[in-house]
Length: 111
Image 1 (cartoon, rainbow, N blue to C red):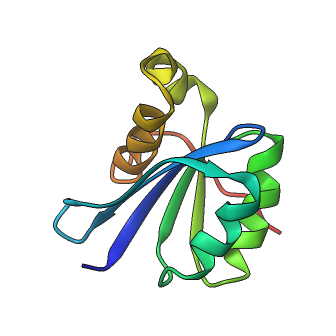
Image 2 (cartoon, rainbow, N blue to C red):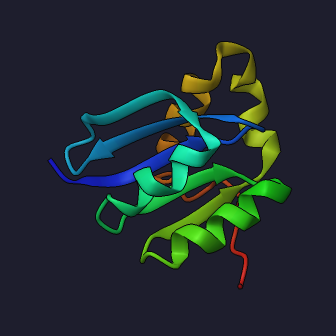
């Protein structure tokens, strides 16, 4: 099972990570990843598409992840906000789902 799409809900200290394989089946669920554990977790994964909500911290993480061969897409916060009340893991799932919807506004940041 190779993870092809990964969604990350960013926060100050604890992140939620949700990954799916080529069949759309859940391959990785990490509802509580500490800040110092996030980069080592991503580094060990094969290059994949990573979706995150656009914020000031997302740009930092996007640069880090791209350095290891991952493709990163940042989503406009207005598309993630309706799901925020459901919890961080749901935010991570939403980040994965929206990568396949061409109508969702994605930010492409050049480093």
